[in-house]
Length: 102
Image (cartoon, rainbow, N blue to C red; front, side):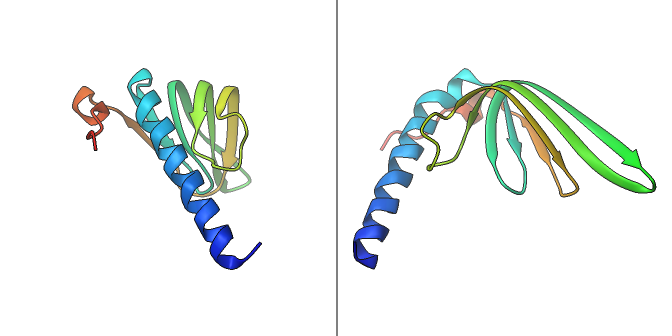
């Protein structure tokens, strides 16, 4: 497989993932971004934890969709993320859910 073939494959996978995102985004109320993943979910619990002077974040989600083109199944029943890095949790406004039709 050439580098050009690999790039074409990855471009097609990303386009397919975007189309799936466009189809499912209206089903969810929250966007959760971590340093490694992007999630859509309706149930999110965000906790700030501390241990010995260190602060970390614990995010628990259920019935989520994960943006990851290498996963065969993107719907996840339960997700738990523990990280020392930034976590962004946003509630989607209904107007945010309207993805432009192209």
